Length: 595
Image 1 (spheres, helix red, strand yellow):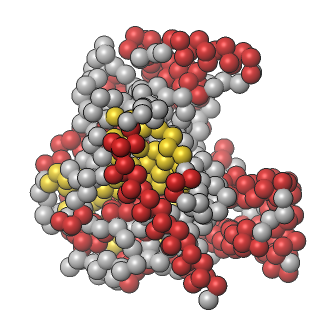
Image 2 (image 1 turned 135 degrees about the vertical axis):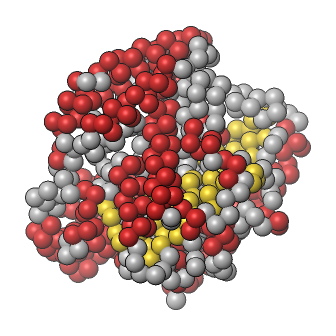
Image 3 (image 1 turned 90 degrees about the vertical axis):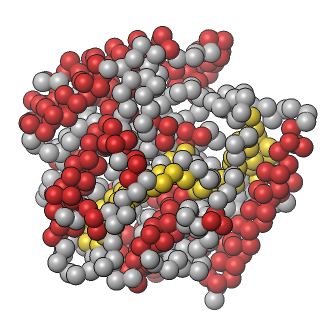
């Protein structure tokens, strides 16, 4: 019988935290305890530093910038995980954020859809179409640019309609409070009216959207869910804000104490940042990082002021739902369940805020208190993040125990990975969050527990997230689609000594107008190179280089070293070949789309 699969993509999972006891107890005690029974990749890297860029490779098995990149997310990739598992007779369950990551052809392959939030039109605008709005203010848009806009609007209408189509109530099982009294039918009617206007004159509609932006009818005519409905505010107020107010105060005090004592502050840079802040009336990156670290960012402050901001199902709720589905699966077919919890994401959370169970919250808070009791005097990092990871680890432990108790664990492949890393830990302090080239944003875990063969194996070769799906296919006896270029990490021909990350920088992934951000790393160097896809490789810019043997924290950029080019030429040669393959893939995809 084929294996069931729980594909747990934990947003913003910082690899270096696993089993780390340098500053006190590990935040991953359960994962540490099963490491000897798992396949564990030590050098797995995301291809991008945020969700949209990271998910393309992770969920397709191909490089992020193949098939015209991730402008339309997964919708131009030959074979994504849903297609492959459906062809192999899997029952598919998807806990997902319902925006333009998927299209109708993908929704049709999902047997059980579970939305985790409202439709996010603001993401379509802010991360895609606003870019073209700014371009249009400077010059007329090209036919190719309009084609990209039309494709994006097509996908938006498809995905939004799927969210509003409420004939299957189970889709909203985990956000019932969020969609309470939500006018689905009225909003769907308005959406269909807007879609008809769009189809009648695509260019006119697109120009109107680009001109109006957030005042356009797609923003003003269609309701959004009232996020204040999601939580049981009375329960949270009593059992967290009131009963555990001392915990938040303690976290804030400990964060300030340890940060002042142990963080390697560059006081000269801090003085310059403060001066620039006064002169420009704007907080620059380094000062922002220092303030975030000293005061645990916005997180503890939001908790302290009773302004809770997690309005989507918790990790425990989703994993309990996944386990329940596996146990109750009577189809005789194997099941794939893909989940994407966000507790570790900036706006971090460390307890089950959407389960009204006093005993559970007391247990979770006691676990946090015990962790804080054992912190060492040399602690560095973000305490709230560590507690959130401790919470995630406990949710995984509960899921394992439930599967084991039901006899399902030995028939299940449990995959734990991430879409990208996490830079808000501020260890070390950086000039810029997220859109930087540093390892903490890219180094992700890949931990696989195979119930049919629970044996340990450490993989030390270098890989990127495009290799995750092929590894799952390998372990499940599924033939890898020929059009994807990722390979199983078990493949002896895939034991690389380097990893390449590639994305289009922060904002819109416009592959024509914006440069590619390349990073290549091995044991000696991290090399960062920026070049437009349509330009010759030599026209690009070498922006950062770090000597990882002398500078493992990537603090000293040695790009000005005269002898540097000779030493890193072998890495630049690899990037040049990759850049040419990206251009070739782009042109081939354009031709096939025309046909």
